[in-house]
Amino acid sequence: MKWFFLFLFFLIGLYYFVPSPPPPGPSEQPKTDGYTLKEPKATTGMAVLIGQSAQAVKKQLGDPDRIDPSAYGYDWWVYSRRPESYVQLGISRGRVVTALVGGEKVNVEPFAVGQRLQTIFQTMPVLSNIEIQLSSGIYRFELSEQDYSSRPVVKVGSVYVQLYVDRFTGKVAAVRLMDAETFVKLRPYELVYRGALPAAAPLSEEKQRAVDAASAKQIFDWTNLIRRRHGLSPLMWDDKAAAAAAKHSRDMHDHRFFSHESPQYGDLSKRLSALHIPFQLAGENIAAHQVDGVEATIGWLNSQNHREIMLNEQFTRLGVGVYADYYTQNFFTPL
Image 1 (tube, rainbow, N blue to C red):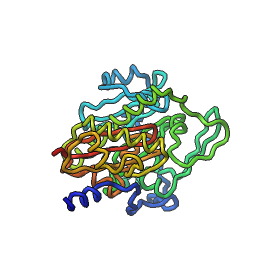
Image 2: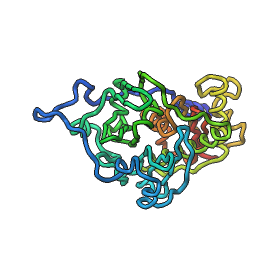
Image 3: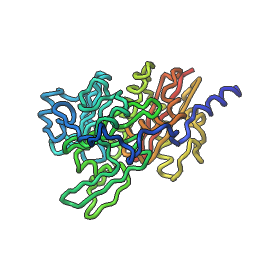
Image 4: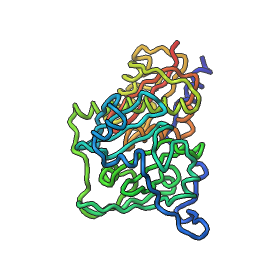
């Protein structure tokens, strides 16, 4: 029994990111044969869809497999039927304002999921600071060194492309595309601004819970996408584990702590047992204050302990629970 709890403790992730060798810093980005790298262009794919109508999306991709609400004023049209073609399109006022690409076969020209980050640094300008002018004001984002190496930004026409990097492989794990207003609403980096700060309207309690449920589904989708890339079997959704995860996320939010150990409900083993979930093996990932669930998932991918849990071939089931900007994954293998 002793070895079991030692192994359980080892599996429960800590909330930190493990540094890996970064690409060139902002002042080191190369020039090629004496000329400055030029801003890339796109003539097809997701970058061209930003700003297009919902009707144009349906004509190109068909009806979405589901529609999820978001906290930012747009609805996610989720195309999840085929993992290699997985994409989420954010629709606001009948137009595409953002996209999240996870499928390797989705056209996200001039990028691709699985592309080496070093190739991007060698062929196009990567931004270390971003200034956006809207009618409401001027907004300047500054990327830290970690941002620059793990969440760099490239501008393609009027579209801002955020590249989520798997820092253990040096390859692009996901691509987020945004128009300027959405970029400011998400505030993914340190921000200085003059004017009014655009923000999504506050959510009612009912709408927030719908957004939380949608985020949990997306985290589940993306976890299985990532496992598939590493040759692992997909996990099955488990309602009881999801309930345990949601309870822990709310507990952390309401009582302002961030830990696998709840002052009131105890560690993961106690919390699963309280809901009568028998298990051979269990592990947990937690995150807080991320832009959304997808960003939290990529963050787990880039932390050694969290990554080991997500990619553990012995786990067969997963429950995800979200409360506001607190996120919990509960993995387990039943008895």
